[in-house]
Image (cartoon, rainbow, N blue to C red; front, side):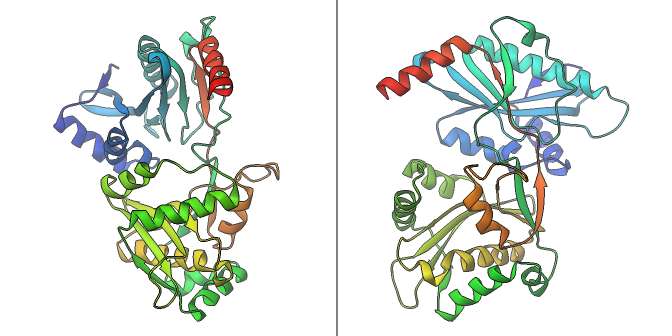
Length: 340
């Protein structure tokens, strides 16, 4: 079956229907995500393997250009493939990935990252046999290997009942203190919270303009801010997005003071209610340390917080990387360590 890159509006509409109706279709393989990435200055390419106008496998590739004309290629939560039928799944994915690897090599890509919804262990990529290409498990934490999914089809009482008692308690603490949560477009106040969070917890924030772009140009994104009663400055915030009847928690931030008011707990509860009211059937807490992982996993602290909200733990295969130019990639990393 031929592999094509889709660009025409009628093809993109056909793809949109495919990914929305697919069991493993996600925000990160959507047309909306492609448009958001392009707003960030990245390129995207939408590869499909099809026959007689019917899509059997697809991959939205995000291309990020780096120093010296090199690039990295990323397939977030993909490729996506047919789930059943008489099709040779191994052959399809091999053909699709071979084409992407071939194009990535021509584009001077350093590496290709894949975070598939299902295992690619059966796929053989002939190009990996070349001496200058290496395949392995990625050490990034871009796409989580595990997350917690809250069922929003239950009543609000049932959603609260399935939470850890401490989660319900902390929500009530915030309510008793009169914390008010409202939707906002105030990205400056949000960024002030982000800076306090990064200084306190010791992680790097994404650039300020990326939050603004997320809010302004990712369809159905939203910002919720939490305030003390009658206050004008927020003490906590949450950014999320709705896609295909699913709510996704994306970013969180909070003030370094007022932590005893438990505003982040009320924010998550109000985000669930916000998504449920808009027809979402699930709420994705977006990332926890995988079950059985080391206590030093970078998401352990977040995992403890998110566990208070209950839900079902859902796991995915670890992200894979195909190093297309291993030597150049190592030299570039050394250069960044030495020169910044």
